[in-house]
Image (cartoon, rainbow, N blue to C red):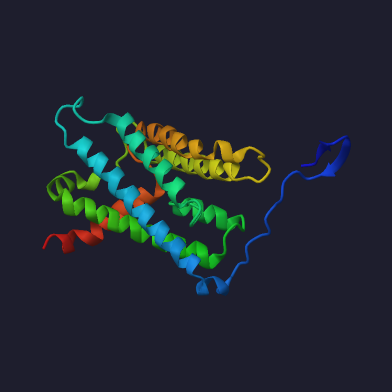
Amino acid sequence: MVKDVVEEGHTHHGKDYVDPPPAPLLDMGELKLWSFYRALIAEFVATLLFLYITVATVIGHQKQKDPCAGVGLLGIAWSFGGMIFVLVYCTAGISGGHINPAVTFGLFLARKVSLIRAVSYMIAQCLGAICGVGFVKLFMKKSFNSLGGGANSVASGYSNGTALGAEIIGTFVLVYTVFSATDPKRSARDSHVPLLSPLLELVLTLQEALVLLSSSTIRRSGMTIGFSGLDHSLEH
């Protein structure tokens, strides 16, 4: 995009933004940097906290016998949106605040991160998800087992194809919003980026709750792997 910039009576023709160069496919130099491992720790801890708080909120709501006693779907949505707000704010300057393999994979395809960083991020995110759900089961073992770990299920009246379509559309909107919010062409992006993530998570959670009572890619991976892999170890 070309924009005319007028400054002190002079007109300049050119870009009013700077596109960062594409990330190298294989950047072995990253493995020697402490900032790389600090970013992995940030992604691990952020995803652990995200899964722990949100899945615990879901289970805490589901175990209530009175539908009005729990936080409700809106409370669950705000737990996801609030956690994303806090975690992205805390980790954006360290790792970029991905906290989701879908976001990391999308940024890799756009050459925003290298292959090594993308794979490492996704491994750290999945491990964090497993540990987060493991803590939920450790502290809420009885409810966790009786409620199936708060696992997703397709609501009655909807087909698996409809549920799959909702997941695809929701994930697309999530990644699209991340790219839109971080686009260097947006001259005022810094003023509204912190608000986009929690509001988007709130909308997507309410949308998907109507179809399959789920939330995001990383939550499903954490509950699925964590429930099956940690079930036996935490029994003893």
